[in-house]
Amino acid sequence: MKILICTGIYPPDFGGPATYSKLLFDELPKKGIEVEVLSFGEVRHLPKIIRHFAYFLKTLKKGKEVDLIYAQDPVSVGLPSVLVAKILGKKFVLKMVGDYAWEQQQQGQGVSFVTPEDFQNMKVDWVSSLRRKIERWVGEKADTIVVPSNYLKKIVMMWGIEEGKIKVVYNAFAPKEVEESKETLRKGFGFIENIIFSVGRFVPWKGFETLIEVVKDLPNIKLFIAGDGPDKEKLEQKINNFGLVGKVFLLGSLPQDRLLRYIKASDLFVLNTGYEGLSHQLLEVMSVGTPIITTDVGGNPEIIENNKDGLLVSYDDKDELKEAVIRLLGNNQMKVDFAMNAQEEVKNFNREKMLGEISGLLKNI
Image (cartoon, rainbow, N blue to C red):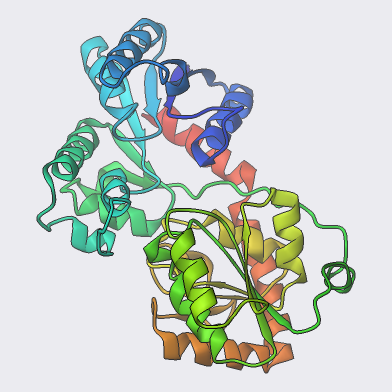
């Protein structure tokens, strides 16, 4: 059996689709599936529209030699590759790691946050409406849609896709070991107070403004936030206006090894997010043994069981979040229990399990 993976990015590019596609390229041949990869990066230098047509032609050429086309997004590679699949009579599988139309709409200037659920039926600008129609059409034409969480399965079903066509295959997670102990790391970073750590793109639905307000009201706590994004200036202004310089720190984007050392050295990891498909970041935090407080949205409850692996709170609820921080910081045994349970839960997201499920699914199709 031979498949063509159509992906928006591929190493040396960074990102989930690149890592996932490279893993399948390396490992599926061991399970009897030959793999070829076509990255959108090969045509990205071309003008818009022309690049999509060029990608269509490349997919058409490579598609003749394969049994199945596996697209990693519903628009940039999904649209041209599903057209090729229908022209050539090939099986077509779509991987959905998020609602592309929603994500693009939410990154527009001055846009108020809406959940992916509310987005499905609300009136939007014509560009977002077009993206929404394209991804739904591509989903309808797919033989199977692969999603990494039951939450995203629910979103795709809201497109009008029948449940039986949607398969949940949790992404593989390979933990990176941090050799130094928490005590050694804390000494190296100069941590004395209670340390709360958070990370993410600086966009409204990540809830960093509320997290900063929570920390403002609590003594003997420092907050470190890693990441970057369009809301950086707004967060810096909030830190200055609240007099939190020296208490709240924006670290910028960090290399993974340094990021994990910061997280392991911290007392708590807090992710006040309004949306997660299935958070790879939470899995990383669980693997290094730092207790977690996050929201009960998206795929979070599928990896964090409340009061077992961490604490789940309502999104952007300042009082509930503050209460959870105080509760967990004040209970060392709870922190130890959460960390141990979370490290055990991470084992369910191992690479061999994912590869076995996806290879079986592709062969069955």
